[in-house]
Image (tube, rainbow, N blue to C red; front, side, top):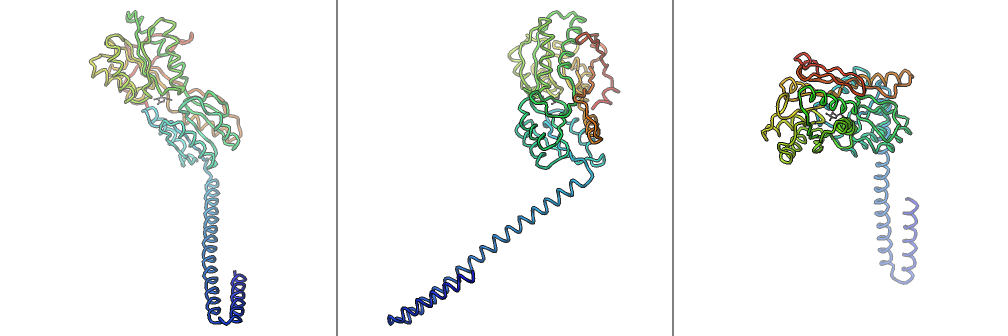
Length: 387
Ligand code: AHR
């Protein structure tokens, strides 16, 4: 910068000498002075810009140093860092699942949990997993909203060396995870079908005309329950009048049932809701349409999940049978992580056991693929113990 100023000063002086020779010494002197002043101003402006750039670089470097220090502190806090990409908050079941995970993966239990509620949005769920990779968590837990579209992001987890554990719903198009912990949805669907067959026989019901309010389309919970129930329906020659998604929500269940009540007025005697929240909405719609349901009424109402409020409706004689999907898988997932921390290979698949619930009058003997099933009678104590 100094060199530049001196250069301009010298060239200004030379110009002055030349113009003096031409008899215009004063004008030349002024021109030279202006040139020098301009050069000094330019130089000062350039120096200000240089300083600003230098300050910005210093600031960025300082920020990086702080980030690195925070990362280092985080990984040296002695806690196991877990990222959990949860489906959303659509149902009582989901609330129980989230609470169970937050209780199990607490700081008191040696974990640092990064919990993301993906609000039933698959794109948000993929983004959550990628953020966990960037944050270099120790383990990633995914409850997949839908069962496909996973291989690319699971490959990224694999390349980053972060083990993935799948909870509840399954992933069908990739095997790049260490373990899956959850319920058998196909068996749940078959249980509903086989129970209905035995219940109908025991109560002299010869014809089944069913409406199905299914869960979120493309989720393994929906696919398994639909396939399992349909397998029995096809075998028994029942009519499934319609199947529409209620997205596992109360509002969704109510909307679908309102439309079913209009379209199939007087034609149906069974309603299958793929979770309790859909059943709550369906009951509101049937109440409004003057359709009676529950044991001994117009409609046999079947539900899944068996959450506390669902079992209360079984006890009240509204839901005829409720097929559990146990949301308390988190302690088992913690066991998988503990095994890996100890250098052991975890089990690839761990089934969480489910129960089938009804009032005493609706408890019937049935089998699934030749295996006799046991039903649990809903009592106040059973409800009290439920999630
Ligand atoms: O994936 C489990 C299912 O998802 C539960 O049955 C339902 O309530 C939840 O939304």
